[in-house]
Amino acid sequence: MKNTKYIFITGGVTSSLGKGIISSSLAKLLQERGYSVTIQKLDPYINIDPGTLNPYEHGECYVTNDGAETDLDLGHYERFTDIITSQANNVTTGRIYQSVINKERKGDYLGKTVQIIPHITDEIKRRIKLLGKQDFDFVITEIGGTVGDIESYPYIEAIRQLKWEPENLVVVIHLTLVPYLSSSKELKTKPTQHSVKLMLESGVQPDIIVLRTEHNLTFAVREKVAKFCNVSMNAVIESIDVSTIYEVPLLMQKEKLDEVVLSKFNLKIKEAPSLKKWRKIVNTIKNADQKVKIALVGKYVELPDAYKSINEALIHAGAHLNLKPEIQFIHSEKLENENISEILASFDGVLVAPGFGHRGIEGKIDAVRFVREHNIPFLGICLGLQCAVIEFARNVLNMKDANSTEMHQNTPFPVIDLMEEQKSVINLGGTMRLGSYDCILSKKSKLYPEYGKTNLKERHRHRYEFNNKYFKKFEDAGMKATGINPDSDLVEIFEIPEHKWFTGVQFHPEYKSTVLNPHPVFISFLNACKK
Ligand code: GLN
Image (cartoon, rainbow, N blue to C red; front, top):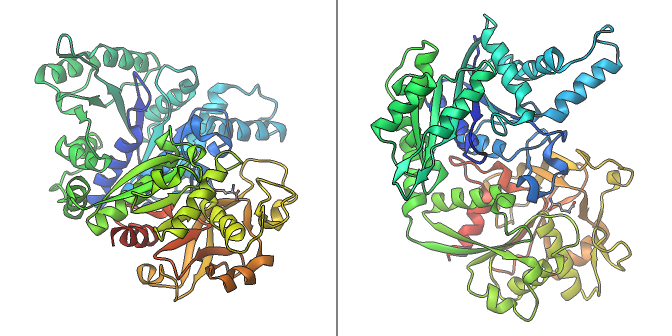
């Protein structure tokens, strides 16, 4: 059994400073030094998980192999490190309270008054240590939100307690912002000082302070932070804005974040890893000169975080092919047959995004028609595949008003329909077809050369499916089911072989794309866009 070490990443001053990227970058650097690492996110909101949250609230919902609907930071963890995460890697306050209340109802607390301390904090600690039991050298735990928020107090208290339990080895990294005042041309450290003070009020002294900044830190700024925040100079780390998040591990290595962490745990510091492959990929991401223009048709276009994994998967595949994908978000509500050619004709490829509900659906269907008729490479993901099926039914098979029963319950041609096992489902949270399912890929598929195998496992998040009643009609008219689930016969992939590249997938390939292992579906798609 390993002596697992715990690293906490907290945030101060504002949210959205990139705790997830710093956690992932540190994990990457420790991994490269030969350590086993996992990363966990604790989210201080009351929802059991983000599955029921509107993307406008919280960005994309990321799905793990085991079917957990989780925070989008888990996507970063997997993309940077190739670590496979699970439900245990994302815990919310809602989940913590749910287990404490369930125990209370069962009488497990033997008549005691159930309180935030010790019962909620004990449950938080249990969830953290649960990962430690899986024999990792390091468990990195990112605490969502900002220090000082009422809802983060129990988490900071749990860290304080863990720090004082003699058997635990704990390092706390606090990420804050040093704002730049352009009028006086100065970086200001006061917000950081206050934020560390807030942590001290809760009894936690950060060991390392990472400063997010738009300008390089001067020696004086580092010195000030070290002095006022009780850390050594080498534990003040600069995190400057960069053009790609994948550069952050390289910057953190330069700043020696990993070395400082190891020294805090009294571990031997060996030679720094070269990160050769990573460096090369970052270089291509930044400098590839051949561009491909991709339209991402969706309805949450004001908020790029809603399509985070798709965006990143395109970047990974681009780097693999030495291409720079230029991704433009197109609002499906603004697309109509009249303006579509003007909007879409200049793109090398069109991707129709996943989604739920009626809003913006007709624009997506019109977009599919345009790319099908104009031989423009098309990738439809989940709802995107369903739109392709609806479009084909209406315009090729002459099924007027064909639709998904999600959008039109009494459509005369329910080409997309609710899955049988979904018909009795009442609760919304965690009840979709979620997580990894098998798919048998046909060797005739245009995806086969990239996959190089026929037994696939891909992640899902949907309630509706292609209605197999229409299977033969689609096949006969030229839309071929090239991927099928062997247990349920659900169609997982549709393609039009006559078309330059026209593929719809019921699963979400974007969840499985990582920097070092770009996903075959995205590689194949970009390859077609390039030609
Ligand atoms: N709303 C569709 C369904 O539930 C598609 C879901 C998705 O795109 N993730 O089947």
